[in-house]
Length: 398
Length: 177
Image: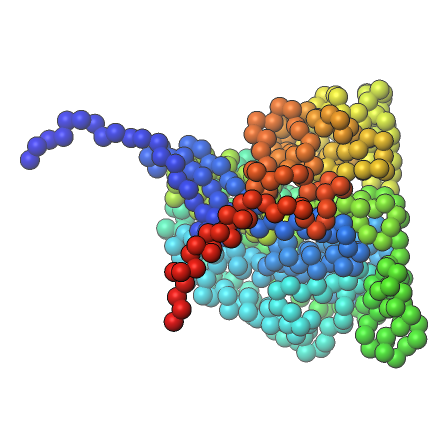
């Protein structure tokens, strides 16, 4: 056999990944410049799902804009609704009653569980561990069924209202949810036995996509993506909203800032969320679910409209004349959604419609850091990096 | 530190730049002139007892017909160690929609500035890669400006025509059973 004398040639190639690619979790497009297996340059392209939510909201009343927020991060719509409602409540200067606060906290944490479940399922699927997907969607189904029982919708719920929540929780719902919280810690262990000590999983996650604490803050990362780098920053603790200051929970923090630590953080968060839900059920106070002055700008419940003159007038005035005007000013309210910090910056010009509604989406910021995480790494790790930042493109593109 | 204290301190350091300090529901906004924005941000970032190390948000607002200076670029800053927040607003006139980029101070400003350029047409001087981000490169106009119609542009985007034509061309390959 003839020996090959010439050394092998290497050439940089440009690889297009997406927008339709199963592991980009939506419609994200990456253009990768490769030198062999190393990524030299990574350019993310977003905007394929842009619907102009910020522009649409400018033409709507505060109440009408609520369903738009469902469509941001569509797998944790409940948390988005709560974030929006809190921002508007703060602008109007009203506060939801205790019971509504606890219900909101409860549903927010349910959303966190369902969102993290999807994250672990798809992240593991991308990295070759398919079984987790099958197990975790079982629990997600349970939560979605509970949402359906609560408000009739599974994904785009629009359940919280400005000044409270739409309807009260039933005892049947609470019982089922309590059963879930009893069951769920065992299920988390099930997922962990599948991957936690798995050699392939460890090899593919440890030391991959490392970002230091200082750099992560500088990039504006939030949520578990930031906490994986060892920064103890959780809005639920730092700026407590709803009933988070009345329940006990810990904030899991990582150390190395790699894919594995972020995975550990989110898994631990599942347990903490479970703990919060349990406390909410136990401590759920009696009382109204709507703030007393809320009827001035949210529609009264339908059964009251049919039976009560006052409510009928309110309903009529709200539909024909528009809602009560908001005070002039501007407000930035952030909440901790499963992905990170979701901020609403609302500028009011003293009318019933937002003059400007800016959505500070965690996925948008996290997608921008992808460039930093991927460059210098291997092409196979690009997928691990996309999974670890936990983005949803509906929120990224708005 | 209390937000009003920070605002006062900022005014002390940059007396000519700070135009207005306003408080609403416990949040303080400081309106500044745009010319020395990088210097102001650098100071806010480096000063040890302020240390705003996180740019939470950067966005534009269009005050067409409401304020003498049309645009504002809003910076929401947060300090991780000191746990305080402030909002900085830089005024950008319509005739010369240009402001210096703060990307050297906070890397996270990268995509926010691109989005602001995309939506308002405000140019960020010194940004290494200022392209449209959410809309296609050949899109006309800046949608979040107040004079941009809410129902969309009069003329359809030409890329959309191409999509329709391609779909028509591929009709013959559709499986008809």
